[in-house]
Structure formats: structure tokens, C-alpha cells
Image 1 (spheres, rainbow, N blue to C red):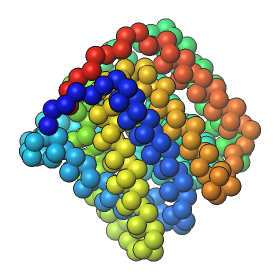
Image 2 (image 1 turned 60 degrees about the horizontal axis):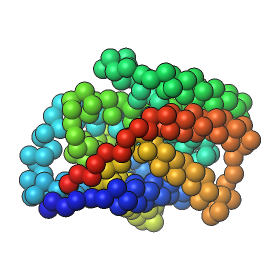
Image 3 (image 1 turned 30 degrees about the vertical axis):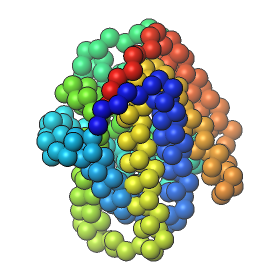
Amino acid sequence: MEREISYRTGVGLVLFAAVLWSLMGLAIRMLGDAGTWQVLFYRSLGMAPVLFLTVTIRSGGHPIARIRTAGLPGVIGGTGLVFAFAGAIYAIQATTVANAVFLFAAAPLFTAIMAWLVLKEPVRRATWGAIALAGIGMFVMVREGLAIGAGWGNLAAIASAAGFSAFTIALRWGRVANMLPSVLIGGVLSVIVAGAVIAARGESFALPPRSIAIAMLMGAALLALGLSIYTVGSRVVGAAELGLLAMVEVMLAPVWVWLILAESASTGTFVGGAILLAAIAFNAATGMRHRPPAITT
């Protein structure tokens, strides 16, 4: 089905996706003692069918053909998502939600560095400045995390951001225009890898029914639905503006856990996070030049 998406509608869809994603930390907190691989397994089980349905609809009933267009870059990117997803879950379990999401936000800057190294894409001077400033913010947060015993959580968050950047680079390298088939591949691979790790460790797949329901709902509604509507909205919103709009997720995520679970964060987390977000906002604002025309989807 072809229809024109307006710029205003695109912005609204991107913001709605950011709000959905901001609930991810709260959902993981509500899973209690569930292990990282168990959460990844059931969350991916919830995510994959929704993404497959979305790809089926948008491909006119030919999902396999659409998935094949992702090719090797899609598989490489999907593999990167396995590490990104697992790292994100572990980070939220091992440190505060505020700390984790602030570090996740560094993904666009990691992408710029990887694109420069791997694809030989030029990096703007302003972006190099933003990367340097972000490095200061990350240092403040990671240093404090090491002091309070949350070092592994911080490192997992950085690894997760790097994983998402690797996914982006793989799609850019392969000139894959539609990311959803590649995310679907990542979801299926996540089920396989998480299941294999759980079995290899001799752990149990069993979780309380409530936890399984939360994990699957998180995958289906928060992640898959969010990605689907973000993909539609991002086609008419510039990359720089997307970086700014996505900050809604970073700002709201600590608010939900504070309001509902009374979870706060340290001064160092907010100082380092503020420096990091300032760097990302600066990079996005300086990259804003032209608004792309509306396209059909």
C-alpha cells in the first residue's frame, strides 16, 4: 500500500517510538531476577512475529523475498544486534537505567567513528568535537561506575551502543535501505543464540508466567512496534533531527523508573550524562541543513 507520509506525521511517529522505547528499562526492572539470556530469548520471541507481519504487509505479501534483499549485510547487521540487545539487557540489570540509557545514546557518535574507519566516510569537524566532548562525559560515568561496582554494566552499555553502530554500518555498507528485515534476522538470531547459551549453561528456560508475558510484550509492543513506526517516520525526517528526537527516550527512561520504582541515579551519572547528551545535541544541531521531501512507503 502506497501512501504519502507528511513531515509532521513522521515527527509524531518518531516521537511515539521514542516514548515506547523509553519504557524498556522499566519493563526489564519488572522482570526481577530473570537472567540476561532468558530475557533476550523471550523478548525476541515476542519481537520476531510482529516484525515478520510488518515485513509481510509492507512487501505486499512477499516477506521472504524482502528478507533476502538484506543479503549478507543484513545477516552481519543482525548478528551485531544480538550483542547489542544482550548488552543492553545486561547493562540495565547491572547499573541504573539512567546510566545505561545515557551511554546507549552514544551510538550515533560510535557510528561516525566506525563509518570513518570502515567505510572511509568523512567526519565533520563538529562531529569530532562532539566525540571528544562525549568521551569526557562517558569517562565521568564509567569512572564512577567502577567506583560503585557497576563497571561491567557501564561497559556492557558501551558495547551495546557499539553493537547498534555496527548494525548501522553493515546496512550502510550493503546499501540496505529497509532495516526491518535485518532487525527481523537479528531477532531470530537472538532466539537461537540465547536458547543455545541457556542450554549450554544448563540453565532453565522456566520463568514465572508474568515475567514471560512482560518479556514477550516488551519485544512485541515496545521494541517491534517501536521499530516499525520509527522506520516509517524516519523516511521523512532528516538524520540529524532523528538524533535530537530520539533523546526523548533518553530523557524519559530514568523518569519512569523514578516515578514507579523510586530508582534514582548518582550525581556523577547525571553530570556525565548531561555532557554526553550535550555532545549529541550539538552534533545533531550542527548537522541539520535540509529537510528531506516526503516520500511514499
